[in-house]
Length: 180
Image 1: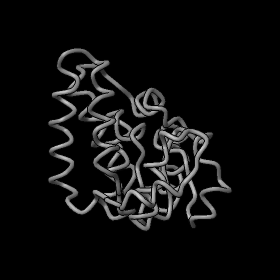
Image 2 (image 1 turned 135 degrees about the vertical axis):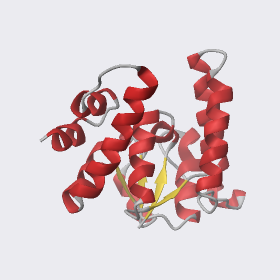
Image 3 (image 1 turned 45 degrees about the vertical axis):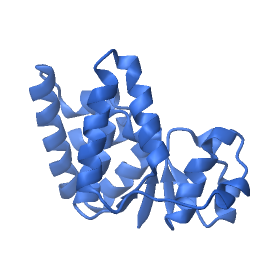
């Protein structure tokens, strides 16, 4: 299954690491565009002077790890599309051009199901998407979660537990499942 990851999914570190961790285990094939990656880098400016350079370094690593994930399209594709927020048509264009099955986003209202269905697409929020993968492959998702938890503890110096970390990362259902 091919899955287009929206900027709002790539920008938060824990969410991104969980999604790409399960993708790395073969659960799905991730897709994004140069514009999505650029939006991530610009959004990281909010973190302070080191935010954008750090994001650009992470993006470089992402490109190296997933060289076939970047999708391109002709401008005419985007020109024919309509979404409630015109600034999101590039996300839909990337999904169509990449032959994605699904868009994972936190912005449900910007991607109406009926419009996506016309293009053979659906959408999911990251918590529901990852919880669904956990239901099918709990050991694999638990292993990825343990790795992400260990990294969060090491980098933050805090004694996170999996449920709290996932809740903070806007993945509460997954956190509850992993803590059980």
